[in-house]
Image (cartoon, rainbow, N blue to C red; front, side, top):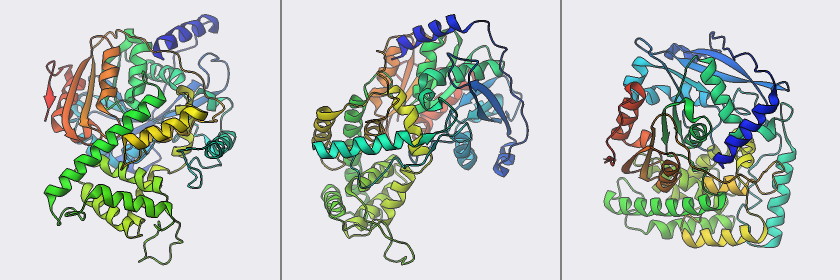
Length: 484
């Protein structure tokens, strides 16, 4: 996907004409009161909607700059990964959780300004408005019949048609234009090289940047990256395996934790989850608590039960006690705990608007192939069912009118070492994705944390310390380092 992206960008540059003036940023007070606790300043970077047509429509990218606590020796651009779903406003997420984020980067925070931005079309960066929600519980994203596939196709086509924003923006929200945004930001910050901390989708963007602009690649960290070198179908298979494995880890934890920590102690958690899914699919699991009669209840679907389980698995070990209660309650008909997590996962505008990003870069398998894949992931993951963010992202692109066939991947040799990190027990971004990304970036360094949870930066103090050291002063972990 990325090798041909370089050719496309160079070809586009050849027909653009005279160079445009370098981008600039005017920093000022932030409108959000929470920004004051970080001493943050806000700004806007104006970029073309279509980088191949710089004279066309433009949008403003919303920026947040957190100053170094000491003398700044440079700038790190980062995304603050939203762990509750498909992401969206990186700025909003940072303002809610920035203290925790910065606590893992003490050396970097002391010596570097940190800049966070909202990706194009999301948050405060010319947000795409989609009036038909991407998630409809009545439409299965796992079609196993022709009528089921037809329903999914019709729904997604309606979603795509109902997304509006700056002219031409829906077709230009993918990596092809995002990497140019990132390089424009680097230029506007006056940085000769991009230093970047990217998690998950931000890891994918960082990998694309390193391949497209290798000469200006600085200290790049890719944590639990989405793999742009794998097809959407392969990512769905990988995620099905990873979530089922993580659920097996949860089952083993429950057996050891005892009844005080795990509400499923003494029972088979997989069997109880299967019961909850079957009951939900029969309309017997309510998304409203029986203790809250003011809430208008709706039946939770089996897929919604499973997507919530996958999101709970992210939070090892602090969320696993809550997961045990959520599964036990759902098997008894009370899905309120799981419903709250599912609602965050499918929250709009982020869930629906993010499809324009995903579907620009990934071609969804259609027809017979998608139906076959639905059955395949159900076999791979008998308890979690293959219901994952990777599957939802892929199935949501069926019928998306702006989808394009991605070009094949290719290796790249960045000017600086790329540090790639992951956990062995990540239920969302399987470690093989990060290893594959590293294999495509010549000279990269990998650091694997042998722990559960989503993201080495968030779940391994050892990995977070290594990331902090690299961003702060360029110190890399030794080759073959494994964090415990």
